[in-house]
Image (tube, rainbow, N blue to C red; front, side, top):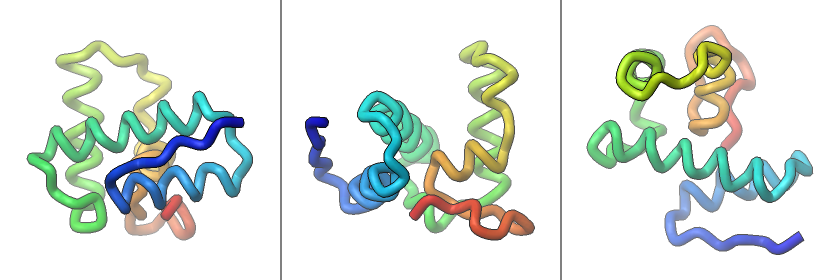
Length: 95
């Protein structure tokens, strides 16, 4: 498997966590792409400074404006992908 290197330390941590779970390179690329989109959607705010409200706003945007499938609307798994931990979801963070 070819490892990809990322310029953002946060994105690199997400990628490293995905690799330790032995996910495919394609999954890594997909997750890191969603994290980048999330960060850009919120004006480049760091994911560690965001929480449930920001995840909900992003998911609403995806559902309403981008017509993303309902199966992607699980806040806990979306937060895990985005590298943040939601209150009441112990261990949901990937980083």
